[in-house]
Amino acid sequence: MLGFVVILIFSKKWQDEVWRIKFVEGRAILITVFAEVLTLSAYFSSAMAYQCYYQTGVVTAAESSLNQLLNLFSAYVLRRFFGLGRDESAKGVGNKLLSALLIMVGLSLAA
Image (cartoon, rainbow, N blue to C red):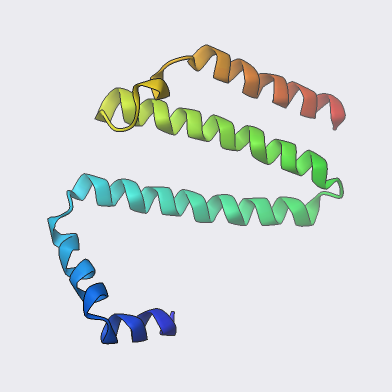
């Protein structure tokens, strides 16, 4: 953190970038903040799962499945309701849900 502050103080380029934030749409900033909060909570949850469960392969598969579901949900909502993202985000939802469901069934059988 201290290194970031030092660079920010002495770098004109970084100062200009920070100044340009006021021209960014508020919705984009809110989505970015929300994504960062989700990332931090996912990292924390993942670290706790690896610490609490002895089979890392199961934790990795569960992490992948939940990541797939969250990405699918986020991409679908952002595309459908906010017009953000690619058209492919809202296509093939059934196949993507089936894939995540199969992974979860496999995890249930393995656990």
